[in-house]
Image 1 (cartoon, rainbow, N blue to C red):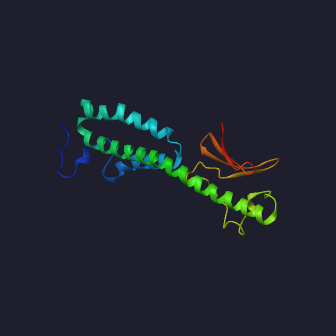
Image 2: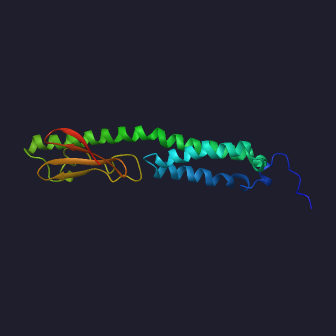
Image 3: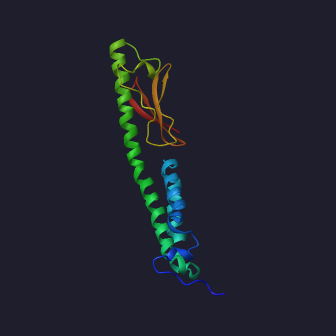
Length: 180
């Protein structure tokens, strides 16, 4: 028995990826997951390399994908757009974290000017010196926020590049540093 003839305007009928709009759920869902979870860009870089070095050539050259080449190229474009978006958000994340840190630092310094000592915890700053302590340093799901250490020296810390790359600010020396 021969396959049913293709109906004009319904190219998805013979598609191995599903029918109608449902065939786009997986690539769009995986792209959104990449945006949410990959603040560092490592996964995005690896996926981008795979897309360009493996997926694209196979989509264009392999005869077994000739019937679904257009859909594979659309998927390629969706995934590559997600990779590009994740990689372009890395400097934005860094800038947001630096601006939020500067606000917290200014609030701590204002607290010290008003009270003659540094605070014991960041909660002592709100609402008089800062409207609220930012819950996260960066715009990312995997962010743990700011940490403040009040010991022999007073230090503000946040994770700039997970899992390592912790950025620190020492209030006594008024200088930035990195841990890890």
